[in-house]
Length: 125
Image (cartoon, rainbow, N blue to C red; front, top):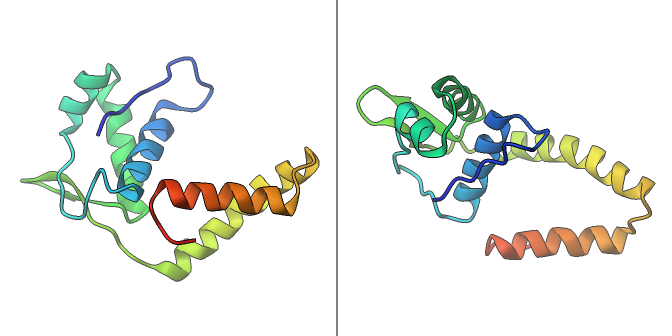
């Protein structure tokens, strides 16, 4: 998986990294049990501070996407709690949809966007 950081973005670097890893898991570029690069290695490869990578890994662990193993490092390990995931999606989507509604996005257009994203991840909608 190739990680690309936008140093000009207003979004924090650790959030960009976290989001890219989650997307990598969703589109199966990263699979259950696969080890991620060490904190030092990833920081060197993308040119960011080790603490930034460590923060992203810690958040991913807290959110149930990774486990941290002393010997293997960060490993993709999905803590599947579908009910909790749906609650979190609903909360995040409520704000995203409200923003779209304020800008004139219709329900049909929102559904098309969701269908498109699901198809990008090769998942059934």
